[in-house]
Image (cartoon, rainbow, N blue to C red):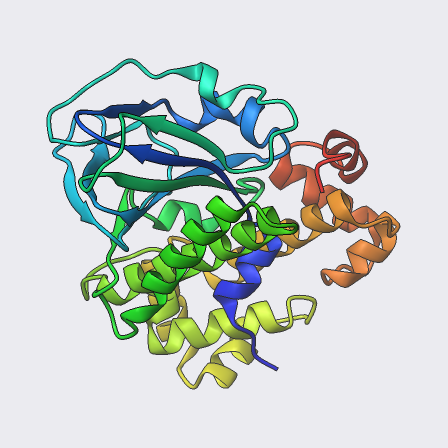
Length: 325
């Protein structure tokens, strides 16, 4: 049975969201965010990688990477920084301000998101809902490498124009009301928003693009990815994969390697280790059972393969990741 490889990958790398800030901004303002890794100890200490995003729920502003030209954002627009780069949000282009790390630190028992008000309000007020998405980057997350430093998506972009507008409205309503369960609602909504951002980025890729997302879009490579993700423990061979994909072995190997940078069986080996790493961090199963779940006949063979790729034995990885699930 095939799988939805994108959904499968997002589960395996433990994508999790949280909304931390609700800004109400009037007049001239600028907020410069540091690299996400500097915020990680205060925001999501259990995550290996942080993705920051901002949703314009009212008004307009400018946003972009530090040192690069910003883009204009309007109500309903979302801007995402997948690689965790430092960036700037401001009322006008060209503004700069040193990052304020104090806003990321302890805010006591206040329910998320934290409200920050700049100015005295009025008809020109801009409102932003800002948050983070955490995920595993190791041992294998091909999606991160396939994403750009910045993604901007608007309510009117793509084939489903109303979804993001609904997200912006719900985000603002939940941020203001602070009802019971609001933090969980916002976290799940932010994860859905990220999936939508990735899908729209996938739709916009040029024909010559390479990378994991380009492979997912390809007729034959995408089919192969879905097959491998659907049954990773199967003793796949290139011949079997090519037969079920509907293309010759040589053509599949060449196309797969061109788009993903590695042949299918090597990709499968890496993907098995990511599944195993996730299970080791979040499951109490024995190492032998996890080895069987990812297609290894013996615990010893699995342990050797895991150490070769990850740099430490499975038991050491489990200990290092204890409490992060």
